[in-house]
Image (tube, rainbow, N blue to C red; front, side, top):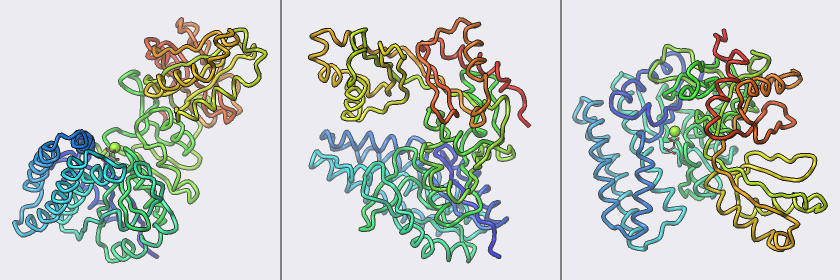
Length: 473
Ligand code: ASP
Ligand code: MG
């Protein structure tokens, strides 16, 4: 029987400096001693943002920008290297790997500044540099602990389509490459430290999986290798019942279902990249969220079923960077195509629609988009309904940015009557005014819209109503 295989991912803060990388190496070594372990790492925290910012400036013709940022990154990584790896020869070998990445970065920035053009493909190449710098350091840190370890460029193992900036894995091809490149390492007890966030097309062109995509890298590899579990090591204790900055009584949830976790990820709880669970759902591979700064804590386990608590309500989440758009007036009652035209328009401008609500009197359709999409969406709608506005068939198209969505999430709310009633009663008692309400027919999410300044009270109230702050075990 082969050893138990864990795929472990470490986010930017978990590899943020030499001390964090050393702690990460300890965790990896622990996993490798228990069984087999493949690690996936993000760039050191802040690095990807810096690279992207510099790429944009280079494209605007600021030719010194690339060299400046690479200089800063060289100092940062060199410092970590000096602390992590004692042996000079070993250090030099890693330095050589890093220099290759810096050389490539410098050519990419120069080309961008020269052409004053930043294609999605070049942006992918530049934004991936951070992972390609952190992986050799972490592998070096693992070797310091007496294990065999090697950095692996994900372009060798994660094969994707050619959608730069948000590529999707081709799982069959990825499996094949993982068998060729990673399986032999696993069998020989060599810890692979794979660069998160990136992959390559079948032609070998580098792609990225979208911001925050290292989580996704980990579950892609977990599924491709049929791992026993995937552990996302981060800087929080797990999935919480609510954002602790808004709800001080928030607690870590020990067990949660794929569906609930995905719902929370979609609604802005920033623990997981929204696509993270997709690759592992079919094979039912459990995913853990754990704190690399407090590895003794159990974290949250995400499994197919999760567990029912508190009348089925598992967690709350709020999104604040959103805007409510409303299209309406009494005149739209007789206009059967208003809904269709509204949402064709949002689709045309690629606005991300988070919630839709229409009263049965049909006076008003309102929906929520991300704040960044609001302006564009309203302009497009005013254009689409120009005639109707002129003839007062559509009375208004308005936008309100001072709002927040609060979502109450729990898979076992399905079939538990009274959750909505309790929620809205509690909110009424606290005088929280509800602007709109929506419940999907999956019944694993009840969402409502409140004024932005009422979001905190709403969260605290519902959290208390369902006893989410009391121990869950
Ligand atoms: N470094 C990438 C980013 O910042 C990927 C990740 O951290 O997951 O988006
Ligand atoms: Mg991240």
